Amino acid sequence: MQFIRKVLSVIMFAFIINILIPGISGFTHSNLEQTYPIEGEKLTESPLTIELWFQDPVVLHPGSIKLADSFGHTIELEGAVVDTNDNTHIISNITKDLPDGKYVVKINVVALDGYVLQEEIKFEVVNKENGQNKEKLRALKYSPADGEILDGSPEKIDLWFSRPVDITAIGVFDDRQQPIRLKEPYVDPKDPNHIIVEFNEELSKGTYQVTWYARPSQDDTSKPDILDVFYFAVDEFTPIQQVNLGEATNSFWFNNMGLKQLGHWLVFFGISTLFGGAFFNSVIYKHNHLKKWNKLTFVFLLFVIIGEAIILTIQKREIGSLSIIEFISLKFVWIPLLQIILITIGLLLAKVRFAFYGTALFLTSFITGHATYPRYGGYLTIAVNTFHLFAASIWIGGLFQLIIIPKKDDMKDWLKDALPKFSRWALISLIVLIFTGIFMTIRYVPSFSIESFIKSEWGKAVIFKIGATLMVFIIGFFQRKTIINLTANALTKVVSRVKVEIIYAVFILIFASLLVVSTPSAAEQGVYPKSLEKENVQLNVAFSPLKPGLNVLTMDFDHKDIEKVEVTLSMPPNYKVTYNAFKVEEGVFKITGNLLHAAGTMNMKLKAIKVNGDKIDFSYKVVIPGEMRFNE
Image 1 (cartoon, rainbow, N blue to C red):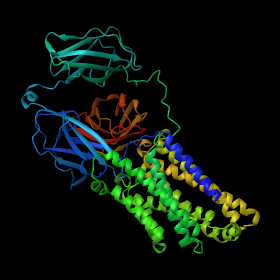
Image 2: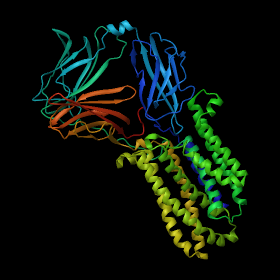
Image 3: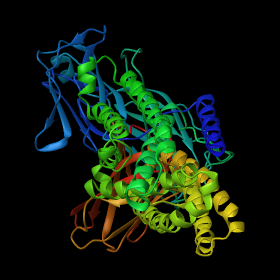
Image 4: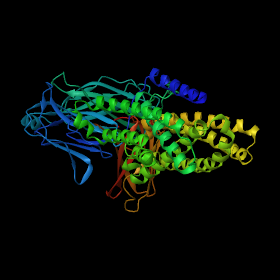
């Protein structure tokens, strides 16, 4: 039992690390793609419903959608329901007309892996007459135009607005983000909606960014200015460059390591070891003395209970005010409680032990991890994840059985009999672990770069887990060679290797629990077409670099009769910008600037206009790598 004490010491050390190092929750377990009302919207009539569209289905509870006015008073809603035609669409009816004023929608739903998603959407109901009579301030056109390449330096910038405006600030910057000297803006005497800004210097070749802030003339000064950005070039297109800015550094440690990760680790460790031990006794080697093992199973049951208690306590706090009955009705609560009941009955009744432990392990795939998401493969990925869990359990539980069961005097005979049988199952388990692990990695992160993978916490956890598994595979290779001719001298070496394997098993489960609380999409980067080839026009799209900050988007059409391209980038709840692309050569268009402003999933729509005036629309999903994922 001395070695068991050492293993428990390692576990306790890891517990302390988890507790002492603060963690943060994973930033993504679903994606709020659309809302009604949209964030910041001003409605001239009271909305009849609150509607939400998620990337994946979510689980509702009685407090999932709440509506409050600017004074914090709760407004009654009908219970939120799932659209029968679209299980990612959530609807809640408003029971009465809303008077003019500001409102906030508080969203609290549970993702398919048990994580609580919280969002707020603000909107305003305004007087219908005021809303109709007062035209919204917007820029009508610019000169130079957005995306225009001029021949030679311009003398001025012209801006036309829908209403008379006061320009509160305007700046022009070259491709190295250096400011260009400007004269004071003035209003065209013949057109109050026309603002003119003259240059104080001649512009050299390259791309320029214009940023302006404006407000309606004689309007309420308490309202924020509106702003916009557009780009033009002199003689040639050049990328906007980032200067004098160091590369952001990533912590080597795991920021997602915390109490919730600790809870998942305890559950994995307890259930895996219990089922693996039962499998060893029922399938691999049926002639055991179970007295020592049965004593230790209480410890593993305690691990499961503590782990589930940690996870459920955090979930209860995140979900908020639900009654105990409402809370227990959530599948992320009653399934863990059922697992504890199954394990307890299995511990007490030997005849059902193997089946009940197996059922408890099987249920884990339906409430833990990313396999439950339809975008990752749904039931197929759940099945593969289940095989992964069972393979890991057979290996881990068997290792503990080899060390715990035999008495010292019987060790050699025991190992000679049990080791060859276990060795075959361990080899099968490791092969299953490797292939299922590869399958799930490809499912979760279909496109990535080495940089995006290594920088993400999910990618780092995968790499550490692969490293530990590879070490176990190497140990197992030498172990099998030694077992073939097991001598008294080799016995000590075999036992030592089993102990080392157990230590690796403990750390592999640590990395597995980190994968649960980390975000696969933080490692992912890619541009995925949503619409197929249109009218026999093929398009290659590429961002350089594909990460938050300054970027260049290149669009290469196989047809040379494309005259103009309009690009709209959007990210819920309220980010949306439109650019006219620079035509750098026949069939090739580019835009530059801070295009990908945050990590997350961005929608991109392209409108290509041919020389004859025909329009072709393309739609893409852009996944930007990074931990702090916007609105996911």
